[in-house]
Image (tube, rainbow, N blue to C red):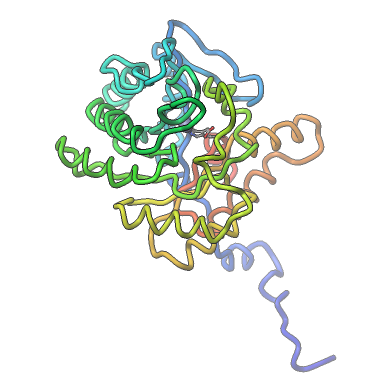
Length: 323
Ligand code: PBG
Ligand code: ZN
């Protein structure tokens, strides 16, 4: 037998040594759980394309918030679904808007839960785009003041962090300035920096009623063919004052995440999006894969690639599977 052979298997011999050698370990605080909040009363409505995920009215939120609190996960991300939509998305920054009311409810009843507010107009605009529209053009600079208003409004309602997901250029700087001027200098910004125009968002758009009414999002979200541009986007957001930068979706973009981790010494987040979740759930429901093992493998890969935070619909299940 060759003397110079590397005997890797010595450290894989049994479960005791394998667990000591494990480089990446998931922890409940790694996870942020997205929650959909809808107007109305006594509603818990299943999202058909996302088994296990529901839209809740504010008066039914306790059911899911109790589970979040018990799981001791890092936090939640709130997505409001307003009844009234208009071209300016005015419910996004209305004092009594659905998301503002949800944030106030969580803050009051569950002060221990860390609340991240997604900042984007697409759930609130009648045309379903993430910014102001003129003809078939999605306007950039005209959109920024609305994103600032939404951020300040949700910070005032009690959000602990804001996370702009619109992909307008310059929004991080605008939001930082707006928050600071309004006295919210302590509220961090988690920027969806490298957000790709992805078919993986399909189920989310059912859940959040946010599909674009015309065209697509390719003039603001990134081309999934582009890795170098993703690093430029991340660099720009860091320069503009982002506290955490995000790559989204996760699984098909772990190369981008890893490269970001090597290039920028910044906290990184990854969004394990709706389509990624639903594919796992569908295959598991058919008995084709082992859901528990696949989910732990996927989430571990995200952390191994460099994610400090993982936004995932699997969060509440995963905490039971990682101990
Ligand atoms: C809103 C937003 C989207 C997601 C998060 N925030 C959808 C989109 O950009 O169309 C996707 C999340 C998911 O698929 O789970 N801009
Ligand atoms: Zn949007």
